[in-house]
Image (cartoon, rainbow, N blue to C red):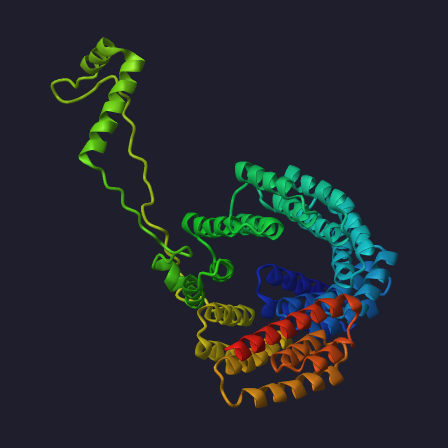
Length: 508
């Protein structure tokens, strides 16, 4: 009987290694029938269930393995891993604590600390996360994923110095990977050290393999610069970087959609409404737009006309330059020495084979690329911005209603408010009733969730649009001083604008 069970478990492990999970499970279950107290049999069954993503079944089998072999730390590790995979964090941490107490094989212990680091990170316990990740490193050695997670934690803790030290470790391990340079770049951007961030990109371009992440970061740098000096040349440079990335690389579907949406945002800030709309349409049919050679920058073609006088002047300038370098007779000798032979050859020249060059932009093989819901929300918001520039309120109404279907509360609020505001701009009779409906809606949202600051600000804006400034100021009183003061200033400006408009009307 013992030999038969051993053979069944050996066959189960082999089937599992060959990704024959169903066969591995059946062999393990057969062994369990023969010996219901065999911990190894429950482990084999648990492993098969894990690969089949049947996590509850895996947990039950690992629990049985622990019950039948309670002093084996590796059994507790298996159970903790299954709990962690099933997002049962408290159970996972308890099982891992027992595994550490009893001891595990090194590979399990390393993974245990790594997972604990991730769990502590997700719980916001960053110091504990660093301790566990460091323990994992001591067992596994230098690991890029562990280093990257540590760097992220240092960024959250605003510990730029240690974050940069970790980024340098990443670059020493893998200088041709962009990840280390990107970590350093993000930390430097966070510290507002833009010149150092630019140098990081320059070094990365020299040593690392460049992908779309590099270009996204280059765009981020220009946006940060724009935030400092408000020079729109930075936005234009960011658009050129986006265009360059799409010409030089073969992006994934999601990278392509993000690129078109980012380009739409840049064009909107440049007040180029038509190109914004073109980019948003491209984002909704990203693969087709890319394969048809869509440009995120509006294409302008300049033609240079060469007059007969200009051609003669250019030729004369070339002759003068050559004479200055070789002299008149030197030029004649050079011409004679480079004359081709009878067959038209110049033997002294080394023949260089033609280099194959890709003359056309590569095509994406994907048939379609569907934007995510977040992408669609962003697209609808940007359409509203573009049509606001064009003062096309019918289109604004269209996209406002689409945005109201968003599952994101803030986007839903934007859609509702934008609809009322567009109706007012169109001087529709239902505009005021829509505003009254909105005021009730935002008031109820505030009652339901007093921390919903978006509902408060939209309610204030509705009162301002209706010219009910006293009510707007009254709602402002519910906010902290830091939030209240900017809104009160906005109300004062709106009052003044209304007064000016009234005075101009009376004068007429």
